[in-house]
Image 1 (cartoon, rainbow, N blue to C red):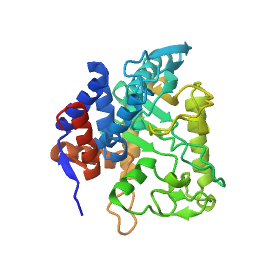
Image 2: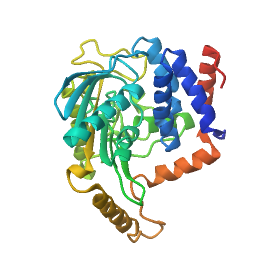
Image 3: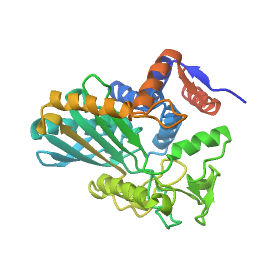
Length: 360
């Protein structure tokens, strides 16, 4: 078995920034896109990190990504805004939109921003966590390519549609929940495909709606399954969560929703009958002192975290985790030891290197 190879964060950072600059991004936006993309690798979410770099490049080559977007507010109230991403990289559009939400929260107490005409934005957690230094709670969500069948359906009508919430604490690390509204994100299937491994039961179904463990199922008409796997285990709740994200991200902003969301892969064309513009996101920032004194809240968050972390674990488990614990531990490890990349990802990046003449 071929093992993953370790690369330093700094080396991947230089390479990724140079690739984004090569396709036309400004220095500032190339740096911003690199930060968002590699934060996924640092946090152990390998499905959304540098493994997707060539996918963004292919979208640019297909003229579906604008490397120099005019990201602008097209409608607003004191606490809300709609942002047009001008077909920019979601890695650039999303943090700019989140900054607008934070700015509105500073004056209005809360800020809410819906985004249209964007592209895949990386990990939702990165954008939600932008609120933390401001003593704010951050919320981020996005719709995505339709690969998910609603409960009782064989049609692919929803994306994996992730939700992230970041909540600051005092002496304890922040609470950070970042999850797809499917049993597993599509990127997890891509990792299994690279490793030639089966998917756990409950992740995917065949084109006829039957359970499957084949990670390639979506390539032959099958679908991902909402969080919960089946009706008896609560898939209707995952379906509701995914629908909520789709409506907030796209129906509210004027982006494409449901089966009209453009695919991430460049070899598939967007639907010929769009109902909106691009992919949609939704962001929220809530100033804690709009509800109670921030210091008081954060002390109680410490108490909440300590209470749950000290919960008695079931037999065979070392401890009870707080959302954000695994990612924080992986970040520290990978900054010290390097980021592991699958050989197929390395090969993909080497092809990019040769194509653009950028050292890897």
